Length: 332
Image 1: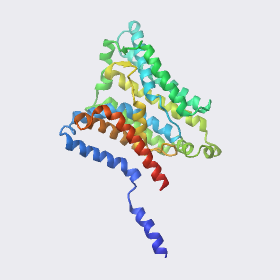
Image 2: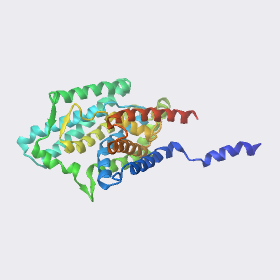
Image 3: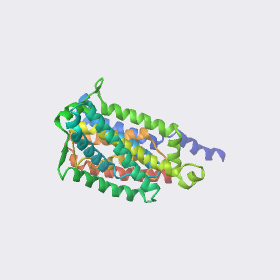
Image 4: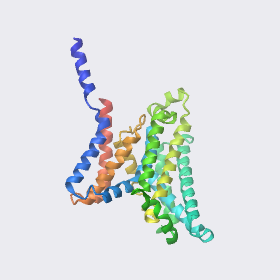
């Protein structure tokens, strides 16, 4: 009798955890599909381009992992990035005549971007924790506010960085070390730091505890409001970092900047295994999720099988499927 009851348990123990291996297997499958469809897929130029373009979303997605793990959500990151980019460009153009084109102006712009990200994240966090408003409502509102503000700053058009400053700033995106561009390097460093914080610090454990059961976390003397606010502050700061790397790419900002970035960031987090309702976060999985989304877009661009304009629709379907699979896994 005991043998029949323990055998199924032992067999399940030897089965691979698809919740962990699923994203990795999907990434491997996409790589194989890309190789089969286009011989240029594995070229250094193509892979470097994919990684550099995914770095912006990846940096933001690392911060989103902490927010979602703590039971929150931020729909404003794309609009926030557009507003911070516009504000940064406007500020650098304004101080250019007095300071002259040089590294100092770029440095001021970087500080403004990081400070604006911190403040924007703090506003979201305080409205959620102190005002007691649902995160969905808060960030939906600030999404509209930031998008409207950048449209106003650009007077309905585009804010462009002064040409002299653009030439100085370009190496931040196009330069790098040993052939690896700076956005890729920064993304890697942010991802490593995020994984360490999530796995090996009290802050990471507290995020998971709050997302799992906020009431129990309070009884366990976790500073719930402070931790939740800090997750939004961290996300805002990383949006600022992403903007710092993004502005030298095009040297401009408009109402179209950052469109669907929130969708891509949330999709990457969910695909990577972080539970949408909170309680668990996996930064390395988020990185895999970012790469999956980037490769899907890249494969669509390299082939004529499906229009690349359907990329957003595909991402939406992926989010729905990922959440459905999470719920089935939880129910099982």
